[in-house]
Image 1 (cartoon, rainbow, N blue to C red):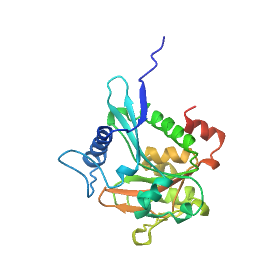
Image 2: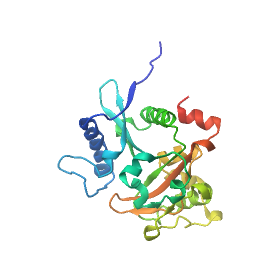
Image 3: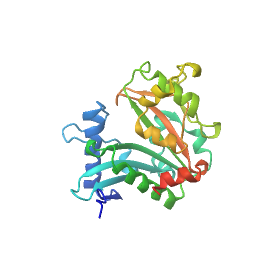
Length: 251
């Protein structure tokens, strides 16, 4: 029989130890690898954490063979954001258009994989776990910030402009970077875009959302603490066609 490949288990963190394991992986990726930081980052313990963590569900994917944590995603349902008082990304983006829509919302963030599992099946299993989570809770709109590494918009002018010209959310989904931090993504005219070169610079997570029919909000946010340039992704499950739903659901 052919090798079935690695086996993974996807679950939500249930204990403080599991949350700490997720925060350690986030530290390795966001702090050690990408040079990020933050007010609550614990360098002594090697934990990337913030005040929002207790309110999120933390989705974990484990390698069954060795028990290693391969990847994480954190998820905030709309009703829990009401309890918290805001969504995480509201410091960066005006989410009024989504919050007033009356639809069931889910905020996503802090997605990362251990380096040994990039380009393999771990992300596939995170996606299928997310699809189950969304279906079980009847989520209608998913959104969250995703990041380009670095804070020099001149170096990111092509991909940011490509997203603005080709993937800007329709008005009813178009969140907008807060006025005090708004960074225009309309940097290169559409006729001057090199789409192929631009797509090379687009991170894999953003490409995945675009393949599923996702959009970006208007304007970027320069996050100097995390050494990133953030865009807000929005995915309306009602707009996904059947092929996209099969991809998303892992069929």
